[in-house]
Image 1 (cartoon, rainbow, N blue to C red):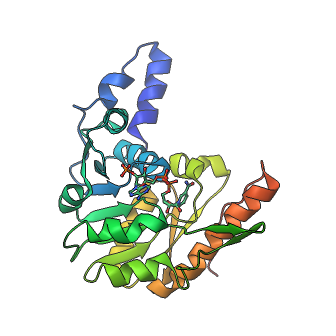
Image 2: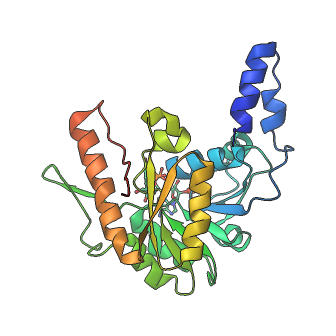
Length: 245
Ligand SMILES: NC(=O)c1ccc[n+]([C@@H]2O[C@H](COP(=O)([O-])OP(=O)(O)OC[C@H]3O[C@@H](n4cnc5c(N)ncnc54)[C@H](OP(=O)(O)O)[C@@H]3O)[C@@H](O)[C@H]2O)c1
């Protein structure tokens, strides 16, 4: 799918007009065939994916500890397409698909504060990280993976480990990688993984169902590898493309 924001930007450039602001404004419509997504957390990942998904037609409801601050209001305005912000619990109630764009050390409290999550699809991009003596490791309370532990906490929800292996510039623009990029998925529900997979396809990325939720521990390892590589070899970066044969 061609993104509306970029298509309109091209049109605006070609015609010398400025039609973009009115289109990405709050009144602009989302695509009614696409589900709403509650993005819990309005930091770097939440805001990047929120804007991108809104461009692709998804209705975005941000969940925040402080939905009424100017910072969050500016974000909903920049997201456009009738995006809104609520406290985490209220946002979670409004969508079947949720993205947990929060730090690992906040995850238990945030999940406990979101009420009944039965039947919801929880997309988990979390990478707990502890840098010790120049080594990029999992924090001590992450012996398995956030994907597995969150599935324990959110019984009845369908946790899908997703997007954690991507850098933020690829979330914003997959073409920045210069080639195809895989989004490995792990989770217990094939249906939930299919739904998350279709969002990644919309984004121009390549989903790959790796299997059960316990495989999150290896996906989180991939992310630590990417972060460690970047830390040592900047400006070089790696992105993952996995091929089946
Ligand atoms: N940055 C990346 O490139 C990247 C890539 C892949 C995966 N990830 C993972 O994605 C997750 C989010 O990363 P991020 O870079 O978006 O983090 P961030 O910029 O620090 O944002 C995290 C957001 O979580 C919310 N939050 C809720 N409870 C919190 C608490 N107790 N302390 C701090 N924030 C709290 C905040 O939103 P409100 O203030 O609105 O509540 C905050 O803006 C992390 O688990 C990270 O490992 C990051």
